[in-house]
Image (tube, rainbow, N blue to C red; front, side, top):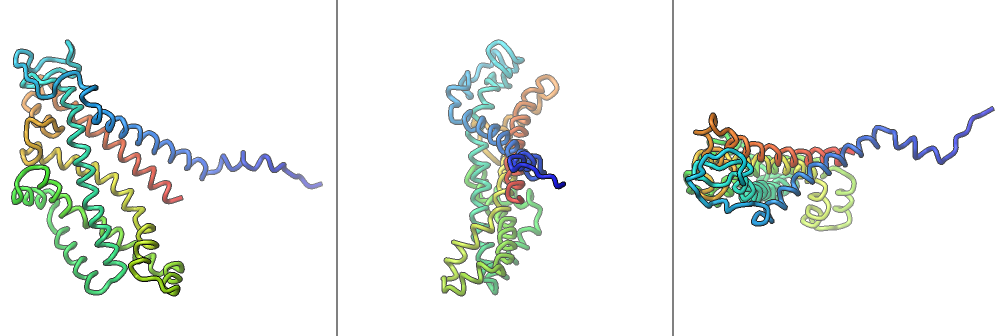
Length: 288
């Protein structure tokens, strides 16, 4: 006597498969990461409503005040509200971090796609330039560029772009080389489509998945580098609220008022966590 199972049980069995469990984990990562980043974005947009004080208003009478008394995180060495400066710094660090990752992503994707698709001299030239750039330590090269261009946001974005495009170019080039041998690309050539149309309509959209994942972690790196450059006086000029500048200002008081250093450091860590979760979630989804 044979056993039979009703078809209504099949969805229940599929829900317990490893693939279904992976799908749920991806959703959790994306939701949590997106929620964290969304909070930062909203805090930056509505900073005048969220921040209880003017971030640049000084009151030396209450300088280095501990948390409390109308100042959630206390005040800095000039009597400025630490929490308000932390909120307003989102308006500086997050946009520069996104721009500092987006510009090299666009340039690297363009160069990598053309190098991989057309090959030849173009591929060789782009490859040798990338090798030269990667031969220098990142921070040393970036500091040298900022010194040459002058400190400020413009110099930082130029240096980010001049150095960061290499990774994107190598990622996209490798994917383009793999895709060139697939049947649908060969079919597009056989159908008489122009090479540029094949590249932009069929190759690049399928070659940028890993670049999108890396883009999320690159935003984190850009924010950390911005904070580091500002810490050394090469980034955003005072008195603009910026997390690296806040860490630098609080360093002399790290023993007596550690919150001045801890607060901006935690802000960087949490936004980095959110972006990393988004990147991991996208990576899991692309691998399915």
